[in-house]
Amino acid sequence: MARQESDREDLLREATALVERAELMIPGEPEPVTVGFRRDSSLSIYFGGDPVYQFNTAGELRRAFADGLLYKAERGRLVQLSRERSETEVSLVRQELSDARTNAFLAAAQTRLAKLDESLAAGEFQTSGQVPAEGDVPARVRDWLRAHVGTLTVANRPNTR
Image 1 (cartoon, one colour):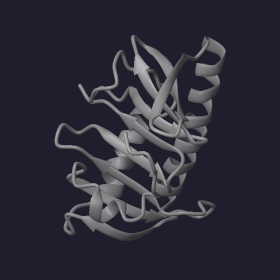
Image 2 (cartoon, one colour):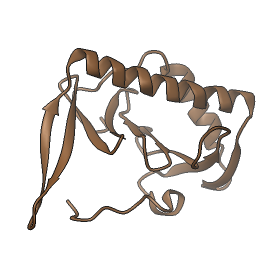
Image 3 (tube, one colour):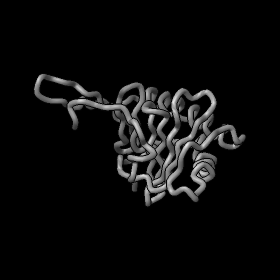
Image 4 (cartoon, one colour):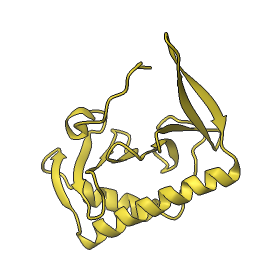
């Protein structure tokens, strides 16, 4: 893991693992929202640099970054990973979230995703870039959100499958 972190500056250009991706300007969002799908159709959503939600092919939350902390799925539970730095290394400290904290985390994610869904459904967004240019990533994201918002669950593992 890198000793120094940098902001996610140009996800549209740099997130090449997301073979279909778009950068959206959404009313009420202070930063662009970058959305994209991997080859296996798993979705990632970046609300600027924080929060970030990554899902597997079944639509389950597999990884997240929120409030400066990393989260990953393990056996259907969320595990928080916090960085601890020393003079010579960075280590990750693992803490499994309680059911109450997991439910609160999922509720916050649901709220954010529902607002994104509402903006997309109402056409209240601007696409500032898309790869490939001829696709319709916002429509694909809207379909995904309609199928999964309200039923978010935690994956068994942090992988996409």
